[in-house]
Image 1 (spheres, rainbow, N blue to C red):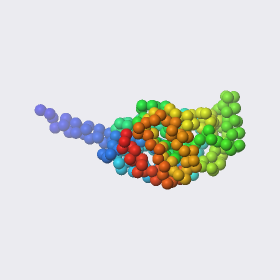
Image 2: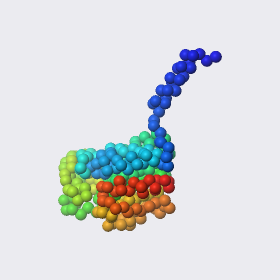
Image 3: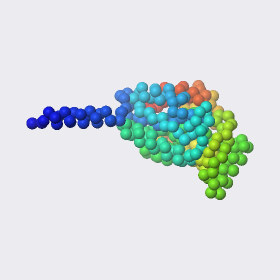
Image 4: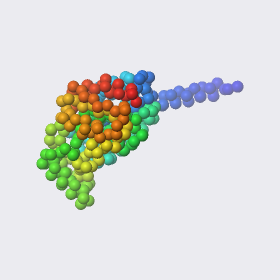
Length: 267
């Protein structure tokens, strides 16, 4: 016969497990889908991607919004201390969190530089990622034309080649036409602005094989580049979609919520 004390202890143990267990996805059409949703340059988790995150969660998806290496305020990053590739490594932790909470399919997504990173991560991870969403993608080092930016690229390249990649200084940076100065290491800053480096979206997109949702606002500066610049470089996939919305660079995630939910339901 089971002793009353043993039964009580067993109930306590079960209760402790339930309390400490990670939260699982809600029921809903997007149940089982985990989304890593990344902010843009000089942004923070929430912000202009917050409404989209709430919508996805209301549909049953699990959402993690990591603080990325390019976080800051008002579009200006705090610094460029980590390289672009090191920043991509931080996405692994977000993916691990989603899997621990019960996500069966992982989608990487972001706005602006966050979209840039989502494309790069999907290109590297292949079948580990079920889909990639680029919402108003941004940061195009291959399209940099400002003389002061080009000079800084050459200077940073020379510093890295001379073994001075860890040296800190002020570098020029830009965000949607705004030019400013940001502190960083030569290797860190240069990794974002090397025209043929890891942050080249067009090059990364050519390695994307997963379902790909590309959303661009008709008032976004990159809209003029058309689908050929990034989207069409990815491998053709029956579930990939190129979507235009009546929005600018910053409000595209909010304006595209219905399109995003509809696309995720196809995965």
